[in-house]
Length: 143
Ligand SMILES: [Zn+2]
Image 1 (cartoon, rainbow, N blue to C red):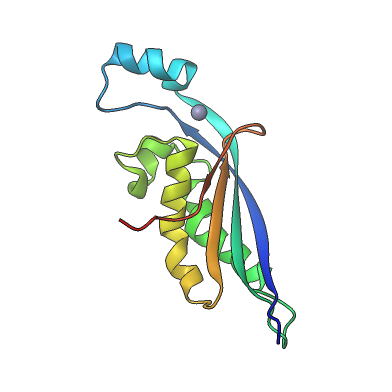
Image 2: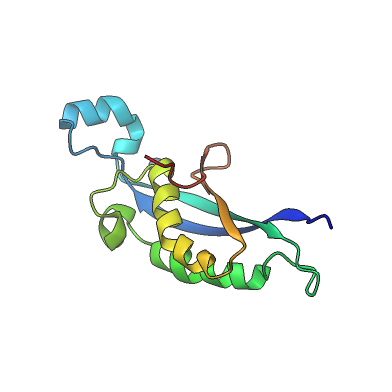
């Protein structure tokens, strides 16, 4: 019997302030590296989560998208929306708040909650910092 593996995606949007600062660089080096992003500014972010799994014969679904939406709202959006990412979000303390690092941080927040829906797997987290720039994370690699 063939099994059908499908990826489902839910997107949420949030607005946050941040600035890019590396603690290992001087003020001058930070300004040279990050340019205008060294100053306090904001973005209209979006986060897209992809869950991959078999379509269940009894429901026709991989996972209830409303459930995925609720998990993203609870564990990602509610903690970052209208916040200053550098200071207001405990799990981002000491993190350079690039889209790359946000994708990794959001993975860590969400992964334990998706694991409960085995055999579905958290497949990708995509963080849009703007309409044109985004980062994709597929989870930690071994080693
Ligand atoms: Zn920025």
